[in-house]
Amino acid sequence: MGVSTAAYQIEGAAAEDGRGVSIWDTFSHTPGRTLGGDTGDVACDHYHRWAGDLDLMTGLGVDAYRFSLAWPRIQPDGRGKPNPLGLDFYDRLVDGLLERDIAAVPTLFHWDLPQALEDDGGWLNRETSLRFAEYAGIVADRLGDRVKRWITLNEPIVHMAQGYAFGSHAPGKSLGFEALPVAHHQLLGHGLAVSELRSRGAAEIMITNNCTPVWAASDDEADQVAAMIYDGFHNRLFNDPVLLGTYPEFLAGMLEPVIQDGDLETISTAIDTLGINYYNPTRVGAPSQDELPFDMKQIDGVPTTAFGWPVVPDGLHELLTGLKTTYGDALPPIYITENGCSTDDGTADQFRIDYLDGHLGAVKRALADGVDVRGYFVWSLLDNFEWAEGYSQRFGLVRVDFDTQERTPKDSYRWLASLLRERG
Image (tube, rainbow, N blue to C red; front, side):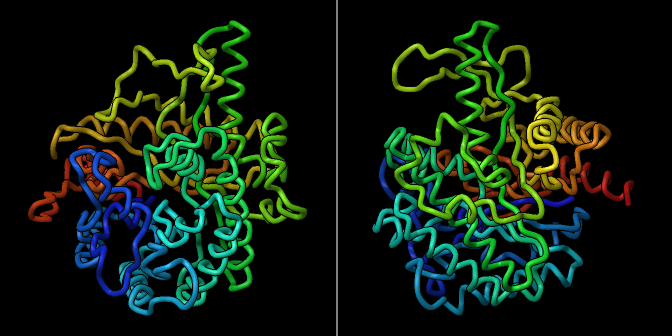
């Protein structure tokens, strides 16, 4: 059992110790891009308060911490010699975790691309895949003697869709289907990074994909087709190449211009486990306009989070058993690398307790049905900078006062700590 965070959402210290500019620095400082003009300049000030935050994990009783490394803190321009002060920070963090008997599970890329690489095309440019592999090697050279479990990418579907197709996340491009090369180049970077990590002795490597059960709005054929297409874009576009070495057939032709010989073999380089982030199912129907081949539909009759996301714990069981059915022997063991909810009920967050209890129960049922789930990470340890929503959405087990940086464990923190003590 562990907790998850991401660098830009918690670290702050945006201009300290040689850190370069990320696309999220640029995006959040552009008027109108984030709610209230919020930025991650300070965030949770984890860069300076990391030791206390690790102590919170000790009090919680978790045995693993999934965090992300800030690429621009390590390579300010995304290429060339590393910044020693940036690597020093992650050295201290990993050592601090090991001193507390907490396993370090770093994610190499959680959306904070160095702005210098974006200026050269970002993930639309194949060269970024090569730079990512170089960066992976630099990090593994420094931390690989203590880190055994690695995650390459976080939610490449979200970064492609929100960052390059619809423009609601950094880098803020609205390219529609012309963003598809971003999918391929992220996956190519993943495959190249796997080889770099493996050559340096990594024991366990995974990619983290955001996955969702897709529900057709009705039995009507048009709705069923729309659901199939959405499943292809959201789930199979990122799972099939990694696990099967192929793209979904209806998308392969659209990607053909950027696929080079050997790419799919690189992308499908063997991984040890698969990270799954789950928040909710998705209900879709036939399109009402020409822009997209599906329409998003509301899921009625269920609670919703402060974000407005439907709460469906059974959807996690459906997702896990569905992955086992779809991929069979090609499916490696799974970690739930993110699962959690935003609430607006302060520190008395019974809603979050019920949410986590329901989803842990869904994992237990999936285990009973033969799905090999190796671990579960709560999103998130701390209230943090929630991307375009700024500081308006609170996902943490620990409340953060963003004016004073005071940390206050919520009821859910105490509930989870008690649960972990009971389970030993």
